[in-house]
Length: 588
Image 1 (cartoon, one colour):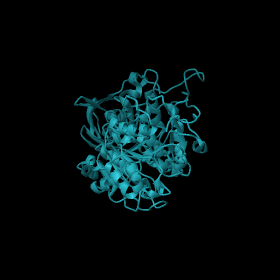
Image 2 (cartoon, rainbow, N blue to C red):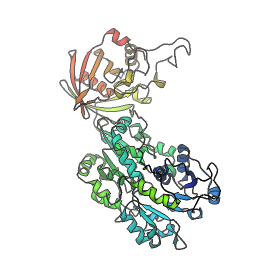
Image 3 (cartoon, rainbow, N blue to C red):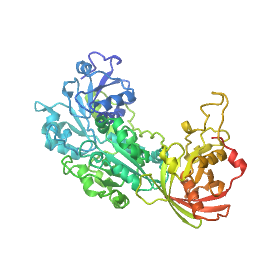
Image 4 (cartoon, helix red, strand yellow):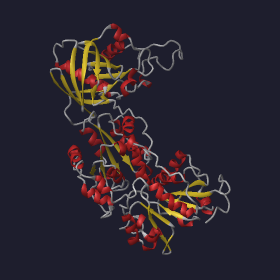
């Protein structure tokens, strides 16, 4: 094997050149998870190329650009000299690339068979049509995740069997390394005490999003906002096939109601770690959730793609199905009794040691001794912070004396509700006209706002919904004017005759509101403390709770202390008459 006859551009003489050949974004992501095998080794130069011929290549190009990878055009890669070629899809003209070739799976297990090309009953990773050239295997190494995969490969493609090595799954090892970061992931997502339910959709005509496109929105409409947080993990091919613009358009109602859409690289895995439950079709992503012990609920309506006896088929056969959106809680309860780790054991071997095993095999092909330091899987990066605050809520309130139980839904829900609450100028033109409660937050950095709405993990909105004249820093446009909390609440009740309560959220624990009948009030929220943890409800929900209590109480005796239940959190809320200095202390 030796070193390259001539170094590629950017490679020093004597370096071994490893070419990463990706055909799609999902294949590239798998290869990126495996590349830590070369970390710390200056003898290795890494280059990337896009294997032509896939309609899913667009997302791979974008992912390479985000990774800052050194790329070479395909024609140049075919002419170049490489010491090792890494791929995670057997399709395309990989056999035309020089050097030893190693093939990794592009998912967990071999679960889907596509009839478009190759053998209709076999997944491409086991199909002789893709794994051989002229009857001989073109790859020098088939790196597999489990002994059962090696047995299936030997049966499906006997010439490739002797070249298989069971190394484990680098992506699973990254997930396992990420488990200690679960709380950080949940904090970034704004989960709080809610249950995070992750929907997983593969690509193609039998995927969850194709078969049940209404499911994300239906789940949001039927389940309380303060009890559940929903996310949708889409296969990277879905982004390539449909396009991000069209996906955003199709999913806009669900996203505006609070649905999270994680990035298809890294963020999807962080959500599996953070999840309390997973709803899945027949895509292999759910096998990773099962390996983490997450409850799994099936949402696959059947078809021809799922390979009988595959790990994913066994998982779906062991978990409860989701018959209708309203039966989610029941299905999650049944799923929690299933030992998903045991089911996923058929897909993953060498847990925690995949990089070590893979490094030995790849350095054997490179004819090099591996570095002395052991490679370690990197935890997945923390998701980008998401305040995830819908601008409009349909609110159901049950008032019994000083106890208020509050349940919030998206505005289009069919559930019975008490009133509509909307963020001022953020819920569209119609919402303020029909909302009984209008609210806004103190912008971050507002004068005298001592911590402002950022306290307790609640971020201010500010932005274009600031007061008239507040277009930037002081002095940018001459004189500056701003509302006080008292002035804005009085103005809002005058501007919107249907509004009964206007509120300013000063912080997670302090609210200023004006009720049309009772007048201006100051509200303090005592966070719930238990077992060394502090839980706070969304202060917007507390505004609705106070509004409902005032509406149900003919002559409220103030100051008063309410017990407010918002989802799984119950807090004490103190309501008192506001003083003039309370109303004038904040600028909006």
